[in-house]
Amino acid sequence: MAHLRSRRRLALAVPVVLSLTASLGFLPGVASAAPLTAPAATSADGPNLAYVVNTKTDHHTIESVKKAIAAADGTVVIAYEKIGVIVVHSANPDFGKQIRAVRGVQSAGATRTAPLTPAGTTEEGAAQVLSAAQAAKVSQSATTGEEPLEADQWDLRAIGADKAAKINPGSKNVTVAVIDVGVDDTHPDIAPNFSASQSANCVGGKPDTTYGAWRPVDADHYHGTHVAGEIAAARNGIGVAGVAPGVKVAGITVAEPDSTQLFFPESVVCAFVFAADHGVEITNNSYYVDPWLYNCLDDPDQRAIVDAVNRAQLYAQKKGTLNVAAAGNSNDDLDSDALVDDSSPDDSTPVTRTVDPHKCFDVPTQLPGVVTVSSTGVKGAKSYFSSYGDGVIDVAAPGGDKYQIPDTPSMNGRILSTMPNNQYGFLQGTSMATPHVAGVAALLKSKYPWATPAQLQALLKAEADNPGCPADPYDGDGDGVVDATCVGGKRVNGFYGSGIVNALRAVR
Image (tube, rainbow, N blue to C red):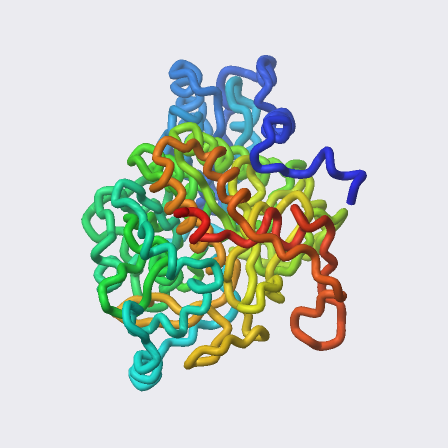
Protein backbone atom coordinates (compact mmCIF):
# COMPACT_ATOMS: atom_id res chain seq x y z
CA MET A 1 0.00 0.00 0.00
CA ALA A 2 2.10 2.82 -1.42
CA HIS A 3 0.32 5.64 0.36
CA LEU A 4 1.34 4.20 3.72
CA ARG A 5 4.99 3.54 2.91
CA SER A 6 6.30 6.58 4.75
CA ARG A 7 4.69 5.31 7.97
CA ARG A 8 5.78 1.70 7.66
CA ARG A 9 8.31 0.15 10.06
CA LEU A 10 11.72 -0.31 8.42
CA ALA A 11 13.92 -2.10 10.90
CA LEU A 12 17.14 -0.23 10.18
CA ALA A 13 15.74 3.19 9.33
CA VAL A 14 16.45 6.05 11.72
CA PRO A 15 13.31 7.99 10.72
CA VAL A 16 11.12 5.21 12.10
CA VAL A 17 12.94 5.29 15.41
CA LEU A 18 12.31 9.00 15.51
CA SER A 19 8.62 8.62 14.68
CA LEU A 20 8.19 6.02 17.40
CA THR A 21 10.10 8.25 19.76
CA ALA A 22 7.89 11.21 19.01
CA SER A 23 4.67 9.22 19.22
CA LEU A 24 5.67 7.89 22.62
CA GLY A 25 6.31 11.35 24.00
CA PHE A 26 10.06 11.14 24.60
CA LEU A 27 10.58 14.71 23.45
CA PRO A 28 12.11 17.11 26.00
CA GLY A 29 9.73 18.90 28.32
CA VAL A 30 6.78 16.66 27.61
CA ALA A 31 5.88 16.38 31.30
CA SER A 32 7.19 19.71 32.54
CA ALA A 33 3.79 20.94 33.74
CA ALA A 34 3.03 17.85 35.82
CA PRO A 35 3.06 17.93 39.63
CA LEU A 36 6.11 16.65 41.47
CA THR A 37 4.23 13.97 43.40
CA ALA A 38 1.17 11.84 42.89
CA PRO A 39 -2.19 12.99 44.22
CA ALA A 40 -3.28 11.37 47.43
CA ALA A 41 -3.92 7.68 46.86
CA THR A 42 -7.40 6.29 46.90
CA SER A 43 -8.21 3.22 48.93
CA ALA A 44 -6.03 0.34 47.66
CA ASP A 45 -8.90 -2.07 47.31
CA GLY A 46 -8.61 -2.90 43.61
CA PRO A 47 -6.94 -5.91 41.97
CA ASN A 48 -3.20 -6.24 42.58
CA LEU A 49 -1.74 -5.43 39.15
CA ALA A 50 1.74 -5.05 37.69
CA TYR A 51 2.71 -1.76 36.04
CA VAL A 52 5.58 -0.31 34.05
CA VAL A 53 6.44 3.31 34.83
CA ASN A 54 8.70 4.92 32.23
CA THR A 55 10.69 7.99 33.21
CA LYS A 56 13.66 10.13 32.32
CA THR A 57 16.89 8.32 33.08
CA ASP A 58 18.54 10.76 35.46
CA HIS A 59 18.88 9.53 39.03
CA HIS A 60 17.11 12.53 40.57
CA THR A 61 13.98 12.01 38.47
CA ILE A 62 13.90 8.28 39.16
CA GLU A 63 14.20 8.80 42.92
CA SER A 64 11.45 11.43 42.82
CA VAL A 65 9.17 9.10 40.86
CA LYS A 66 9.85 6.26 43.31
CA LYS A 67 8.57 8.47 46.12
CA ALA A 68 5.47 9.27 44.07
CA ILE A 69 4.95 5.55 43.45
CA ALA A 70 4.99 4.88 47.18
CA ALA A 71 2.58 7.78 47.77
CA ALA A 72 0.20 6.22 45.24
CA ASP A 73 0.28 2.86 47.08
CA GLY A 74 2.70 1.28 44.68
CA THR A 75 5.60 -1.06 45.47
CA VAL A 76 8.74 -0.97 43.33
CA VAL A 77 9.77 -4.46 42.20
CA ILE A 78 12.87 -3.28 40.34
CA ALA A 79 14.08 -0.10 38.66
CA TYR A 80 16.07 -0.33 35.43
CA GLU A 81 17.62 3.11 35.79
CA LYS A 82 19.69 2.90 32.60
CA ILE A 83 16.53 2.84 30.50
CA GLY A 84 14.17 4.62 32.90
CA VAL A 85 11.77 1.68 33.39
CA ILE A 86 10.37 0.92 36.85
CA VAL A 87 8.36 -2.25 37.50
CA VAL A 88 5.66 -1.69 40.11
CA HIS A 89 2.89 -3.65 41.85
CA SER A 90 -0.18 -1.84 43.13
CA ALA A 91 -3.73 -2.59 44.28
CA ASN A 92 -4.73 1.06 43.89
CA PRO A 93 -7.32 1.06 41.06
CA ASP A 94 -6.29 4.63 40.14
CA PHE A 95 -2.55 4.00 40.27
CA GLY A 96 -1.95 4.36 36.52
CA LYS A 97 -3.91 7.60 36.25
CA GLN A 98 -2.23 9.08 39.32
CA ILE A 99 1.33 8.18 38.39
CA ARG A 100 0.95 9.45 34.83
CA ALA A 101 0.34 12.91 36.32
CA VAL A 102 3.74 12.93 38.06
CA ARG A 103 6.56 15.11 36.71
CA GLY A 104 9.22 13.03 34.98
CA VAL A 105 6.84 10.17 34.14
CA GLN A 106 6.71 9.83 30.36
CA SER A 107 4.31 6.89 30.19
CA ALA A 108 2.88 4.38 32.66
CA GLY A 109 0.32 1.63 32.58
CA ALA A 110 -0.82 -1.80 33.71
CA THR A 111 0.89 -4.74 32.04
CA ARG A 112 -2.07 -7.07 32.51
CA THR A 113 -5.82 -6.92 32.88
CA ALA A 114 -6.17 -9.73 35.44
CA PRO A 115 -4.83 -9.68 39.01
CA LEU A 116 -1.38 -11.01 39.81
CA THR A 117 -1.39 -14.72 40.66
CA PRO A 118 1.12 -16.87 42.97
CA ALA A 119 2.97 -15.96 28.31
CA GLY A 120 1.72 -16.41 24.21
CA THR A 121 4.25 -18.23 22.01
CA THR A 122 4.21 -18.44 18.25
CA GLU A 123 4.07 -22.13 17.45
CA GLU A 124 1.05 -23.30 15.50
CA GLY A 125 -0.70 -26.43 16.76
CA ALA A 126 0.26 -29.12 19.23
CA ALA A 127 3.67 -30.76 19.45
CA GLN A 128 4.15 -34.18 17.86
CA VAL A 129 6.65 -36.12 19.97
CA LEU A 130 8.82 -38.59 18.08
CA SER A 131 8.37 -42.10 19.52
CA ALA A 132 11.28 -44.48 20.05
CA ALA A 133 10.09 -46.62 17.14
CA GLN A 134 9.82 -43.60 14.85
CA ALA A 135 13.26 -42.39 15.91
CA ALA A 136 14.74 -45.80 15.14
CA LYS A 137 13.18 -45.72 11.66
CA VAL A 138 14.57 -42.25 10.95
CA SER A 139 18.02 -43.27 12.21
CA GLN A 140 18.18 -46.00 9.58
CA SER A 141 18.16 -43.27 6.93
CA ALA A 142 21.11 -41.37 8.41
CA THR A 143 24.15 -41.18 6.17
CA THR A 144 27.80 -40.89 7.14
CA GLY A 145 28.44 -37.62 8.98
CA GLU A 146 24.78 -36.98 9.73
CA GLU A 147 23.13 -36.88 13.15
CA PRO A 148 20.83 -39.89 13.79
CA LEU A 149 17.62 -37.90 13.21
CA GLU A 150 18.96 -35.47 10.62
CA ALA A 151 17.19 -37.21 7.75
CA ASP A 152 13.98 -35.64 9.06
CA GLN A 153 15.56 -32.17 9.24
CA TRP A 154 14.62 -30.92 5.78
CA ASP A 155 14.93 -27.39 7.15
CA LEU A 156 18.71 -27.63 7.55
CA ARG A 157 19.14 -28.67 3.95
CA ALA A 158 16.74 -25.97 2.76
CA ILE A 159 19.10 -23.22 3.96
CA GLY A 160 22.38 -25.09 3.49
CA ALA A 161 23.03 -25.44 7.22
CA ASP A 162 24.19 -29.04 6.85
CA LYS A 163 26.94 -27.96 4.44
CA ALA A 164 27.72 -24.80 6.40
CA ALA A 165 28.53 -26.84 9.51
CA LYS A 166 31.39 -28.52 7.65
CA ILE A 167 32.92 -25.13 6.86
CA ASN A 168 32.20 -23.20 10.07
CA PRO A 169 29.79 -24.49 12.77
CA GLY A 170 30.01 -21.20 14.64
CA SER A 171 32.14 -19.78 17.43
CA LYS A 172 31.93 -20.49 21.15
CA ASN A 173 32.42 -16.76 21.59
CA VAL A 174 28.90 -16.14 20.25
CA THR A 175 25.80 -16.71 22.41
CA VAL A 176 22.16 -16.75 21.37
CA ALA A 177 19.77 -16.21 24.29
CA VAL A 178 16.39 -17.90 23.96
CA ILE A 179 13.85 -15.60 25.65
CA ASP A 180 11.06 -18.09 26.19
CA VAL A 181 9.32 -20.55 28.54
CA GLY A 182 12.59 -22.05 29.74
CA VAL A 183 15.34 -24.25 28.28
CA ASP A 184 16.12 -27.79 29.42
CA ASP A 185 19.90 -27.55 29.47
CA THR A 186 20.18 -31.19 30.60
CA HIS A 187 19.12 -32.41 27.14
CA PRO A 188 22.15 -34.20 25.61
CA ASP A 189 21.91 -32.16 22.41
CA ILE A 190 21.81 -28.83 24.28
CA ALA A 191 24.12 -29.46 27.26
CA PRO A 192 27.42 -29.23 25.30
CA ASN A 193 26.65 -25.69 24.14
CA PHE A 194 24.68 -24.27 27.06
CA SER A 195 25.83 -21.09 28.81
CA ALA A 196 24.57 -21.06 32.41
CA SER A 197 26.35 -17.78 33.20
CA GLN A 198 24.19 -15.98 30.61
CA SER A 199 20.91 -17.58 31.69
CA ALA A 200 18.25 -16.50 34.19
CA ASN A 201 14.59 -16.51 35.14
CA CYS A 202 13.06 -13.05 34.54
CA VAL A 203 9.44 -13.85 35.43
CA GLY A 204 7.99 -10.89 37.32
CA GLY A 205 10.59 -8.46 36.00
CA LYS A 206 13.56 -9.23 38.27
CA PRO A 207 16.31 -11.69 37.22
CA ASP A 208 16.84 -14.86 39.25
CA THR A 209 20.22 -16.39 38.46
CA THR A 210 19.91 -19.32 40.86
CA TYR A 211 21.39 -22.36 39.13
CA GLY A 212 18.69 -24.07 37.06
CA ALA A 213 16.17 -21.21 37.43
CA TRP A 214 16.03 -21.00 33.62
CA ARG A 215 14.67 -24.53 33.22
CA PRO A 216 11.03 -25.19 32.23
CA VAL A 217 8.76 -26.00 35.16
CA ASP A 218 7.41 -29.11 33.44
CA ALA A 219 7.39 -30.98 30.11
CA ASP A 220 4.43 -28.91 28.87
CA HIS A 221 6.74 -25.89 28.80
CA TYR A 222 8.61 -27.34 25.81
CA HIS A 223 8.68 -24.36 23.47
CA GLY A 224 12.03 -22.87 24.54
CA THR A 225 13.83 -26.21 24.49
CA HIS A 226 12.64 -26.83 20.93
CA VAL A 227 13.83 -23.37 19.87
CA ALA A 228 17.23 -23.81 21.57
CA GLY A 229 17.83 -27.08 19.73
CA GLU A 230 17.01 -25.49 16.38
CA ILE A 231 19.69 -22.89 17.01
CA ALA A 232 22.54 -24.83 18.58
CA ALA A 233 21.92 -28.57 19.03
CA ALA A 234 25.42 -30.05 19.00
CA ARG A 235 26.72 -32.31 16.26
CA ASN A 236 27.66 -35.01 18.74
CA GLY A 237 26.20 -38.17 17.25
CA ILE A 238 22.99 -37.78 19.28
CA GLY A 239 19.58 -36.83 17.92
CA VAL A 240 19.42 -33.66 15.81
CA ALA A 241 21.68 -30.79 14.73
CA GLY A 242 21.21 -27.05 15.09
CA VAL A 243 21.73 -24.38 12.44
CA ALA A 244 24.83 -23.17 14.34
CA PRO A 245 26.01 -26.25 16.26
CA GLY A 246 29.22 -24.59 17.45
CA VAL A 247 27.79 -21.50 19.18
CA LYS A 248 26.52 -21.17 22.72
CA VAL A 249 22.87 -20.96 23.68
CA ALA A 250 21.40 -19.47 26.86
CA GLY A 251 17.91 -19.55 28.35
CA ILE A 252 16.07 -16.56 29.80
CA THR A 253 12.67 -17.59 31.14
CA VAL A 254 9.90 -15.01 30.84
CA ALA A 255 6.75 -17.18 30.72
CA GLU A 256 4.43 -17.49 33.68
CA PRO A 257 4.97 -20.91 35.32
CA ASP A 258 1.30 -21.90 35.16
CA SER A 259 -0.56 -23.39 32.20
CA THR A 260 -1.13 -19.97 30.59
CA GLN A 261 2.59 -19.54 29.81
CA LEU A 262 1.97 -15.82 29.24
CA PHE A 263 4.85 -13.43 28.51
CA PHE A 264 4.18 -10.19 30.39
CA PRO A 265 6.03 -6.94 29.54
CA GLU A 266 8.00 -6.57 32.76
CA SER A 267 9.49 -10.04 32.27
CA VAL A 268 10.51 -9.25 28.70
CA VAL A 269 12.07 -5.91 29.75
CA CYS A 270 14.12 -7.83 32.30
CA ALA A 271 15.21 -10.35 29.65
CA PHE A 272 16.47 -7.78 27.14
CA VAL A 273 18.40 -5.88 29.80
CA PHE A 274 19.84 -9.08 31.30
CA ALA A 275 20.94 -10.37 27.88
CA ALA A 276 22.60 -7.08 27.02
CA ASP A 277 24.39 -6.79 30.36
CA HIS A 278 25.68 -10.37 30.11
CA GLY A 279 27.30 -10.12 26.69
CA VAL A 280 24.68 -11.94 24.64
CA GLU A 281 25.17 -11.31 20.91
CA ILE A 282 21.72 -12.38 19.67
CA THR A 283 18.30 -12.88 21.28
CA ASN A 284 15.60 -15.14 19.89
CA ASN A 285 12.05 -13.90 20.51
CA SER A 286 9.49 -16.49 19.37
CA TYR A 287 6.50 -14.91 21.09
CA TYR A 288 4.46 -11.76 21.39
CA VAL A 289 4.21 -9.77 24.60
CA ASP A 290 0.94 -10.48 26.44
CA PRO A 291 -1.79 -9.57 27.10
CA TRP A 292 -2.30 -7.61 23.86
CA LEU A 293 -1.64 -9.09 20.42
CA TYR A 294 -1.44 -5.49 19.16
CA ASN A 295 -0.57 -2.60 21.47
CA CYS A 296 -2.26 0.66 20.43
CA LEU A 297 -0.57 3.95 21.26
CA ASP A 298 -3.87 5.73 21.95
CA ASP A 299 -4.40 3.50 25.01
CA PRO A 300 -2.23 4.61 27.98
CA ASP A 301 -1.59 1.08 29.25
CA GLN A 302 -0.65 -0.30 25.86
CA ARG A 303 1.42 2.79 25.09
CA ALA A 304 3.41 2.20 28.28
CA ILE A 305 4.02 -1.43 27.27
CA VAL A 306 5.40 -0.41 23.87
CA ASP A 307 7.52 2.28 25.52
CA ALA A 308 9.02 -0.03 28.17
CA VAL A 309 9.81 -2.98 25.90
CA ASN A 310 11.16 -0.67 23.20
CA ARG A 311 13.50 1.02 25.68
CA ALA A 312 14.80 -2.39 26.76
CA GLN A 313 15.36 -3.79 23.27
CA LEU A 314 16.99 -0.54 22.07
CA TYR A 315 19.28 -0.72 25.11
CA ALA A 316 20.25 -4.24 24.04
CA GLN A 317 20.94 -3.06 20.48
CA LYS A 318 23.16 -0.26 21.75
CA LYS A 319 25.11 -2.84 23.77
CA GLY A 320 25.66 -4.88 20.58
CA THR A 321 22.78 -7.38 20.74
CA LEU A 322 20.78 -8.28 17.64
CA ASN A 323 17.13 -9.05 18.44
CA VAL A 324 15.30 -11.50 16.17
CA ALA A 325 11.51 -11.98 16.48
CA ALA A 326 8.62 -13.97 15.01
CA ALA A 327 6.08 -12.21 12.78
CA GLY A 328 3.16 -14.23 14.18
CA ASN A 329 0.81 -16.99 13.10
CA SER A 330 -2.40 -15.08 12.36
CA ASN A 331 -1.79 -14.85 8.59
CA ASP A 332 -2.17 -11.10 9.16
CA ASP A 333 -1.02 -8.51 6.65
CA LEU A 334 1.00 -6.25 8.92
CA ASP A 335 0.97 -3.53 6.26
CA SER A 336 -2.83 -3.47 5.89
CA ASP A 337 -5.11 -0.59 6.79
CA ALA A 338 -6.98 -2.61 9.41
CA LEU A 339 -6.82 -5.95 11.23
CA VAL A 340 -9.34 -7.66 13.47
CA ASP A 341 -7.95 -8.67 16.87
CA ASP A 342 -10.36 -10.94 18.71
CA SER A 343 -7.82 -12.49 21.10
CA SER A 344 -6.91 -9.55 23.35
CA PRO A 345 -6.55 -9.23 26.24
CA ASP A 346 -5.58 -12.89 26.60
CA ASP A 347 -5.27 -12.83 30.39
CA SER A 348 -8.97 -12.06 30.95
CA THR A 349 -11.96 -11.68 28.59
CA PRO A 350 -10.98 -10.85 24.98
CA VAL A 351 -12.84 -8.06 23.20
CA THR A 352 -13.06 -7.93 19.40
CA ARG A 353 -11.52 -4.74 18.03
CA THR A 354 -10.24 -3.41 14.71
CA VAL A 355 -6.67 -2.07 14.77
CA ASP A 356 -4.32 -0.28 12.39
CA PRO A 357 -0.97 -2.17 12.49
CA HIS A 358 0.82 1.09 11.70
CA LYS A 359 -0.39 2.50 15.03
CA CYS A 360 -0.97 -0.69 17.03
CA PHE A 361 2.19 -2.80 17.33
CA ASP A 362 2.89 -6.50 17.68
CA VAL A 363 5.64 -6.36 20.32
CA PRO A 364 8.56 -6.98 20.06
CA THR A 365 8.54 -7.89 16.36
CA GLN A 366 7.36 -4.48 15.08
CA LEU A 367 9.81 -2.45 17.15
CA PRO A 368 12.62 -0.59 15.34
CA GLY A 369 15.80 -2.56 14.67
CA VAL A 370 14.24 -5.93 15.48
CA VAL A 371 14.59 -8.54 12.70
CA THR A 372 11.02 -9.58 11.79
CA VAL A 373 10.78 -13.17 10.51
CA SER A 374 8.12 -14.89 8.40
CA SER A 375 7.84 -18.65 7.95
CA THR A 376 8.23 -20.98 4.96
CA GLY A 377 7.61 -24.67 4.31
CA VAL A 378 9.66 -27.32 2.51
CA LYS A 379 8.56 -26.01 -0.92
CA GLY A 380 9.88 -22.57 -0.10
CA ALA A 381 6.41 -21.08 -0.07
CA LYS A 382 5.04 -18.93 2.75
CA SER A 383 3.59 -21.09 5.53
CA TYR A 384 -0.20 -20.97 5.56
CA PHE A 385 -0.25 -19.46 9.06
CA SER A 386 2.57 -16.94 8.74
CA SER A 387 1.85 -13.23 9.04
CA TYR A 388 3.44 -11.06 6.38
CA GLY A 389 3.59 -7.47 5.14
CA ASP A 390 5.42 -5.38 2.57
CA GLY A 391 8.09 -3.33 4.34
CA VAL A 392 7.48 -5.18 7.63
CA ILE A 393 9.05 -8.62 7.07
CA ASP A 394 12.84 -8.48 7.03
CA VAL A 395 13.69 -12.09 6.15
CA ALA A 396 12.06 -15.53 6.05
CA ALA A 397 13.16 -19.00 7.18
CA PRO A 398 11.84 -22.55 7.46
CA GLY A 399 9.17 -22.74 10.16
CA GLY A 400 7.24 -25.71 8.84
CA ASP A 401 3.89 -26.20 7.13
CA LYS A 402 1.73 -29.32 7.46
CA TYR A 403 0.42 -28.77 3.91
CA GLN A 404 3.93 -28.79 2.39
CA ILE A 405 5.08 -32.41 2.69
CA PRO A 406 8.79 -33.30 2.47
CA ASP A 407 10.37 -36.46 1.09
CA THR A 408 11.76 -37.49 4.48
CA PRO A 409 11.39 -40.69 6.52
CA SER A 410 8.57 -39.23 8.65
CA MET A 411 7.10 -37.16 5.76
CA ASN A 412 6.40 -34.43 8.31
CA GLY A 413 6.40 -30.84 7.09
CA ARG A 414 6.96 -29.43 10.58
CA ILE A 415 10.33 -28.77 12.24
CA LEU A 416 12.03 -31.52 14.28
CA SER A 417 14.00 -30.44 17.34
CA THR A 418 14.72 -31.08 21.00
CA MET A 419 12.07 -31.44 23.71
CA PRO A 420 12.39 -31.65 27.52
CA ASN A 421 13.26 -34.97 29.15
CA ASN A 422 15.63 -36.02 26.35
CA GLN A 423 12.88 -36.24 23.75
CA TYR A 424 12.41 -34.90 20.21
CA GLY A 425 9.31 -33.55 18.52
CA PHE A 426 7.83 -31.69 15.57
CA LEU A 427 6.44 -28.15 15.79
CA GLN A 428 5.51 -25.52 13.21
CA GLY A 429 5.16 -21.75 13.47
CA THR A 430 7.00 -18.49 13.02
CA SER A 431 8.42 -19.57 16.39
CA MET A 432 10.36 -22.19 14.48
CA ALA A 433 11.40 -19.85 11.66
CA THR A 434 12.91 -17.29 14.03
CA PRO A 435 15.62 -19.59 15.51
CA HIS A 436 16.77 -20.46 11.98
CA VAL A 437 17.41 -16.76 11.43
CA ALA A 438 19.03 -16.41 14.86
CA GLY A 439 21.26 -19.38 14.02
CA VAL A 440 22.36 -17.87 10.69
CA ALA A 441 22.96 -14.54 12.44
CA ALA A 442 25.18 -16.41 14.93
CA LEU A 443 27.18 -17.85 12.04
CA LEU A 444 27.59 -14.36 10.59
CA LYS A 445 28.66 -12.99 13.99
CA SER A 446 31.17 -15.83 14.24
CA LYS A 447 32.65 -14.84 10.88
CA TYR A 448 32.43 -11.07 11.50
CA PRO A 449 32.86 -10.69 15.28
CA TRP A 450 32.96 -6.89 15.14
CA ALA A 451 29.70 -6.57 13.19
CA THR A 452 27.06 -4.35 14.81
CA PRO A 453 23.40 -5.42 15.06
CA ALA A 454 22.57 -3.20 12.06
CA GLN A 455 25.42 -4.72 10.05
CA LEU A 456 24.34 -8.25 10.96
CA GLN A 457 20.82 -7.50 9.80
CA ALA A 458 22.16 -6.11 6.53
CA LEU A 459 24.26 -9.26 6.05
CA LEU A 460 21.26 -11.50 6.72
CA LYS A 461 19.37 -9.71 3.97
CA ALA A 462 22.30 -9.68 1.54
CA GLU A 463 22.86 -13.44 1.85
CA ALA A 464 19.16 -14.36 1.58
CA ASP A 465 17.48 -16.04 -1.41
CA ASN A 466 14.22 -14.40 -2.49
CA PRO A 467 11.78 -16.56 -4.49
CA GLY A 468 9.68 -13.49 -5.26
CA CYS A 469 5.92 -13.24 -5.00
CA PRO A 470 4.11 -16.38 -6.24
CA ALA A 471 2.88 -16.25 -9.83
CA ASP A 472 -0.47 -17.77 -8.90
CA PRO A 473 -2.91 -16.52 -6.21
CA TYR A 474 -1.74 -17.75 -2.79
CA ASP A 475 -3.83 -20.61 -1.37
CA GLY A 476 -1.82 -21.87 1.57
CA ASP A 477 -4.17 -24.61 2.75
CA GLY A 478 -5.35 -25.71 -0.68
CA ASP A 479 -9.05 -25.09 -0.10
CA GLY A 480 -9.50 -23.04 -3.25
CA VAL A 481 -9.72 -19.70 -1.43
CA VAL A 482 -7.05 -17.00 -1.79
CA ASP A 483 -5.52 -16.62 1.69
CA ALA A 484 -3.07 -13.76 1.24
CA THR A 485 -1.74 -11.31 -1.35
CA CYS A 486 1.97 -10.78 -1.82
CA VAL A 487 3.04 -7.19 -2.56
CA GLY A 488 6.50 -6.26 -3.82
CA GLY A 489 9.11 -7.46 -6.27
CA LYS A 490 11.78 -10.12 -6.60
CA ARG A 491 14.25 -8.23 -4.42
CA VAL A 492 11.95 -7.33 -1.50
CA ASN A 493 8.33 -8.33 -0.92
CA GLY A 494 5.74 -8.85 1.78
CA PHE A 495 5.97 -12.65 2.01
CA TYR A 496 9.75 -13.07 2.36
CA GLY A 497 11.18 -9.60 3.00
CA SER A 498 14.66 -9.74 1.50
CA GLY A 499 14.42 -13.52 1.17
CA ILE A 500 14.95 -16.87 2.89
CA VAL A 501 18.15 -16.85 4.93
CA ASN A 502 21.10 -18.91 3.69
CA ALA A 503 23.51 -20.47 6.18
CA LEU A 504 25.96 -21.70 3.54
CA ARG A 505 26.40 -18.22 2.08
CA ALA A 506 26.81 -16.86 5.59
CA VAL A 507 29.92 -18.96 6.26
CA ARG A 508 31.40 -18.61 2.78
